[in-house]
Image (cartoon, rainbow, N blue to C red; front, side):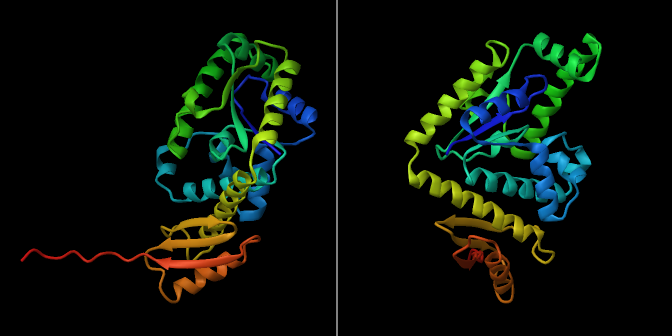
Length: 273
């Protein structure tokens, strides 16, 4: 029932390792490209718009556009929905950062020396060695900046991962076996309450995405909480008729058992006498 997330760093043979681990575990195997396609279809945005979430760093002017926040919310909802179904190996540039800390899965950062990674890239993309090395360096820099911009996470900090794995230190079959053994241990020790929290996190993400998709709600500063399928939405201005509108949107999301809409009250400042 575990979730194995692999960060797709250039030249680390992530797809090969992910497929091997999924086959050993008899788990589903998904890539970020497949999730982008699913997200595009569900939330009525183009794959080109979603590429910013898992492919490239947003330019300065793009970071000022609120659409970027929407794209991240849509992609996160799609990723967490798949994670909540469990038995999954998922490969992507940002998916590891989206796995909640509930003990239901592992975040794996794949690494390798610059020489090894550049050699793989040169073979895959038919590049000269010096060009491949420059591509890997540029990619690493852009990748780190993009995740920092979108999610506020330093992908080079090992504390953000369960394990860091050099995919060139051992044969891929052995590394895949290690990941399979780790997933098996998670299956053994994870409690039902942990999986309940995982499902609630996925449902809350779906609800937030549905609210952002609605043209009259969009980027309203709403906080969505979920416990055992019961949704609570908090935010300023959630008074009639906005509370009814939010209620209607949330109830259309599959899996929602109940809805509570709470209007935040702002304290009126008291003038000093």
